Image 1: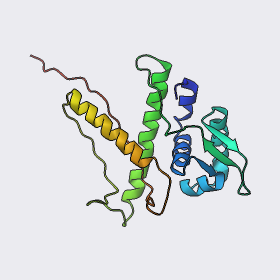
Image 2 (image 1 turned 60 degrees about the vertical axis):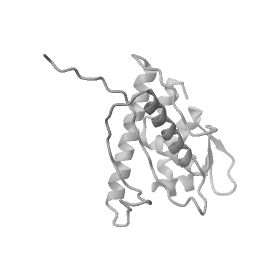
Image 3 (image 1 turned 180 degrees about the horizontal axis):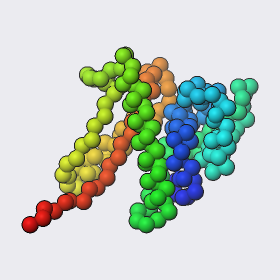
Length: 182
């Protein structure tokens, strides 16, 4: 996704969650299904869905008796094109990143409030961390390969085997080395 106006649509946490949820549900869902997954009233989604349809992020398709249905236009998971520097695209992408981090914070807060959340072991489903370290080209390539693998693992339909819905957010950003003053 490279159109700045379209990217701006995803700066809204509500619209970002709708797109993420559509993709998690296999790319297509009714308003009722989206509302149930998001824990929101269906009426609160129509405004955002209209904007996403107008922005050509999702399509409204004929329902099969369960109300309006929506389909993600993305063949794979939604990806934003980054155009760094003093660009409108950079501003829009930065807003989307801020929004996804706010969503991640809410997801974490809701999960840590539950007594049944798993916080260690092989089936750990809750953690937050910030890591900072030095890497070379090989390590950076490996980090990106692993992030792509994580994204691929999360991009699958619900099934008997895939019954746990999780959220994963990350930011990989180069830092400027701070030099010591003499």
